[in-house]
Length: 69
Image 1 (tube, helix red, strand yellow):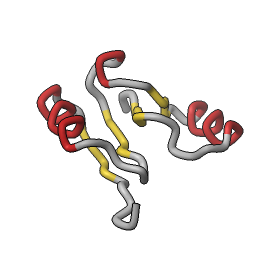
Image 2 (cartoon, one colour; image 1 turned 45 degrees about the horizontal axis):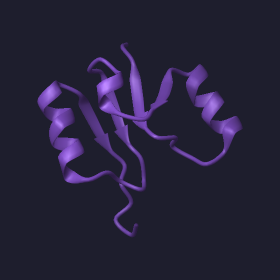
Image 3 (cartoon, one colour; image 1 turned 45 degrees about the vertical axis):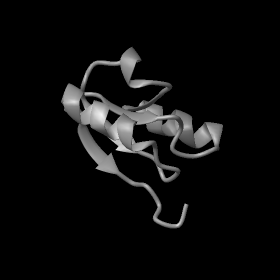
Image 4 (cartoon, helix red, strand yellow; image 1 turned 180 degrees about the horizontal axis):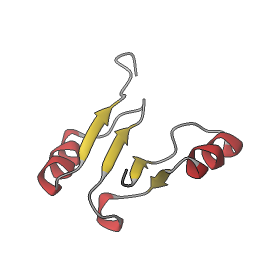
């Protein structure tokens, strides 16, 4: 249960993003706009400070950053 967020869309396909939203995976622009929950780091990754802030705020993080990006 609980909310699941992504920082930015997981993919660049509006239909797929809407499908994920219906399944409860919500893209957001920043951590400041949401309460702690589950957070997926998309394949493009985020700066280390963002992950540190998410951990500090109590998010459960799944880092899906591609090692080749």
